[in-house]
Length: 273
Ligand code: DGL
Image (tube, rainbow, N blue to C red; front, side, top):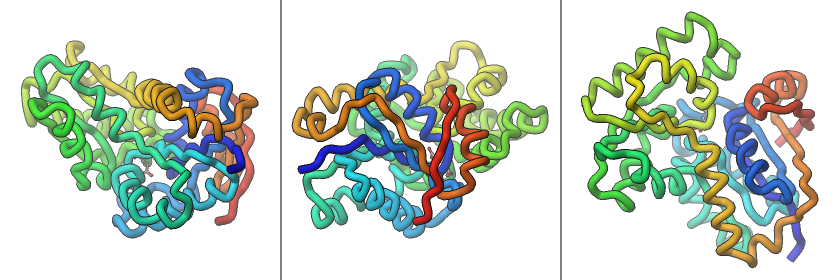
């Protein structure tokens, strides 16, 4: 079995908010990041389309030698992960692993809520899939999950309009919609890897007693734990502390915007799938 880097996937830039935290927690590993920017956003697309796009990207990671791929995208985790794990992995290579971001977040959410009322904000795809209510119920049957799709938030972030005054209207709109579902929501989960960029604005529109959770650190801690428990996978991951970035769209655009998400300069390579 050949060794290789850990693959980190998102439809665009959002997964960089996750890779950033993973690389802090596990700096010794090598990473390949792929943003499918040419086909983003995934949020409004059909199940079949998201599944096909994600599978194609996962197969590409495997060709690069990745033993483990993290879908650092809630939409892909909600719409494609289970099918890839159950239908594709057994035939492609049963020794490879693909993990998502919904389970690690659902596992830990009960530690943050006292009222047992949690709000989940995500893309239309993630919300319609009901993945969060289903997963959270498995770990915390007493928690009630309220959901709100925020279809304008990814475009605001992708178009670098998220700090503008115009963004305020849509940020506040979806927050009021979710908070109007229950007075007792004390935890709001940013269930889209693009949303951490909106966190300051979000906090400005909601009562101070509500905890706003983003997923980067949660997923990084969960991966650390996973690699400790699965030495056979950890041993297949190369450790030179290097990260390589690929985008399916313009590298100039990617490099310009990616640093906002990643917090460091990024030089990407163009990938034609
Ligand atoms: N970052 C993706 C997520 O976590 C959504 C972006 C998109 O709609 O493509 O769901």
